[in-house]
Length: 461
Ligand code: SAM
Ligand code: SF4
Image 1 (cartoon, rainbow, N blue to C red):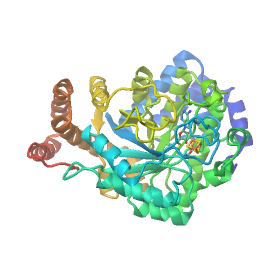
Image 2 (image 1 turned 120 degrees about the horizontal axis):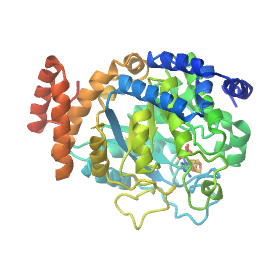
Image 3 (image 1 turned 90 degrees about the vertical axis):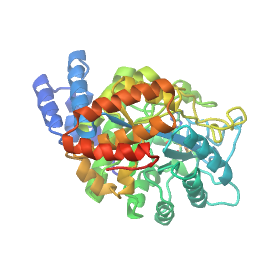
Image 4 (image 1 turned 60 degrees about the vertical axis):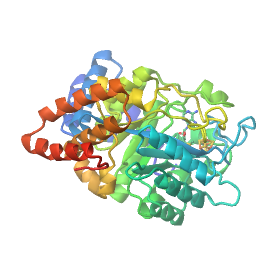
């Protein structure tokens, strides 16, 4: 597979098993100074098994998470627009051979309705998701761009979706240019597995069966001018240590070639999917402890990147992963096209969800754990994407802005959507964080809060 040196990864993993505790402390000291780790250092951390040493890694990851991102956690909802697919990924319910699945590609007005439904609950950021087959009469990219426009057009006045990210199949440079012109935020694509043999086994037919066409999609997106790119691996297909080093090799390639690393890294774990035996019994199933280690090692290895946790994880684990490095979570999610507004009539979903809490419940849980729920899209609005985002994120400068914007957007949510208990808890949180700010920041924030009280929305520093 392009950009992935499997032999080097295997050698690093073999060498890593021999390392001692003094080296662990050195690596963690380096990570705490917010420096990127080398592949060998990340391999060493991945090989740690001793519970006390693991606790050290977790503590360092919490430190780095807090230093770069502060207490804010960004919330988003996936919007599945179609489950038509030409591929046969063995782990996915949307695979072409799953003849039992009820198929549907939402019509453009239906996509707008789904966005309206999410807007009414307070969502501001959407991840648009779809299978790799366009509905009749459309090309993939024309369907996507119309869908993006429908989502941005949904709602009225100040009640609009602020950012549409997209997770879709690889495109050509020209098609990526059209996608960029439609106003997308991040383009997300998961390599699924960085182990070539496993990749070929898991993707027996369809355009996705070519691993190089998939891994080079990131390069084509960059060349088309999309500089916020999200990568990921589907954990459970192959050894998690190899996959994590595969992800980090991909990061190195992006940094070398485009001077910009991934805006986000996603860490989905295989969930049970209708019609997929492999999803019920994944070949390399990871434990919760291993999963926590993966998140912590990614946070320490690439401090500037956002780490996304999907709704796939159960509430207890998801809450504990937040402290280790996760900076974005999905909330109140549904994986069926049309599933939000017509749950019973909806088409088949992609996998079953570990977390069925509503957005309001998740906002309440975040507040209870002292995380500031954020609906901010300021970086995107101010064109702080790609390299200019990285410049702020690398030294941790983004944190001050993120926390202030999180407080402003939380205040908006409390006025417009929160239930009474969440409103009370959220207000207490805002007051507490406000008091801890420097006087100059308090003055700034006072003005924003006055605007929010007057009905202004979507303000940011
Ligand atoms: N079809 C496009 C593709 O595969 O790139 C984009 C959408 S696909 C629905 C998004 C992601 O869902 C895939 O990249 C894969 O990682 C994830 N996925 C598929 N089956 C899954 C399962 N059973 N459990 C968890 N995640 C799964
Ligand atoms: Fe299709 Fe994506 Fe599912 Fe594979 S993972 S079957 S490409 S929707």
